[in-house]
Image 1 (cartoon, helix red, strand yellow):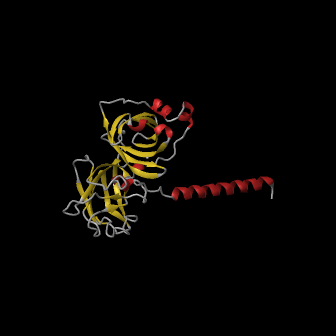
Image 2 (tube, one colour):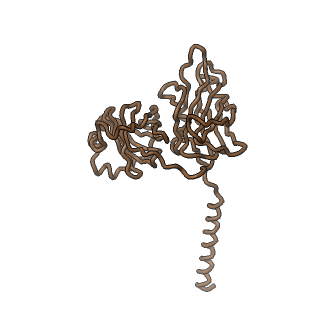
Image 3 (tube, rainbow, N blue to C red):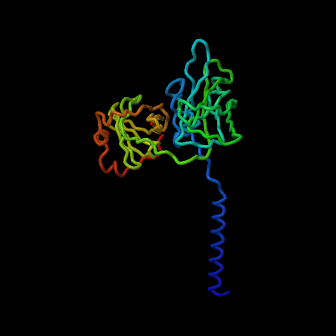
Length: 310
């Protein structure tokens, strides 16, 4: 066999292998995206109760089975229906819902898993335009996937938890998920720059491209990280650098910032607040805050924050 013929056969085999690889990749569908997840722009706007900061309502969309929502302490009359409203980053044609109770505390509180749940949707606002979607039963200590008979457009999802599996005091849910296709063009996100009145006092954020820095008055803290304008993956540092952690926060279309903060990788509770339209600064600035916790200019430029978890 001639040298040129060998090269031709080799080139042909390489092209065939490349074609097979491209065909295989083209045949693989894109992984479905949970459009309720905080990391994908989902944000809880309202809820009726939560037990405490260790079992916050934000846990139902944090993409972690290690955390869960628990209802607040019941009134003397016993359990009452619970509800929450979740905003997605744009309108989606929803095709499937998921209720995950796999890691609720059934061992110590038998019957605590959410059971009967009613879903409603709106494309108008979080306050009006609600249309009933379905009422279904979640599974006790298990996961239930609910394909919809036809796609349903929604930007806001209302979840009403009507009963549990028999526990007399509390209701729990691990995760809620929704899957579907985007409808139309995504509206521009609200400008995240500004001052927020939060449950940890005032927080100021400054965004340049996808970089975010900021500071908060409580404990003279400093924050830095990445954002797409709606989802903020940030690090927080306070007490002159002795304490630090991460946070995943989402800014709603109406200026409500909501998420979770973590320390040593452990979820510690919600971090939330409203944007103050009449405030542009507070008694701190990111540069001074960074210096206060031991950061210098080169550190600020060179350090790449990891995945947010405060």
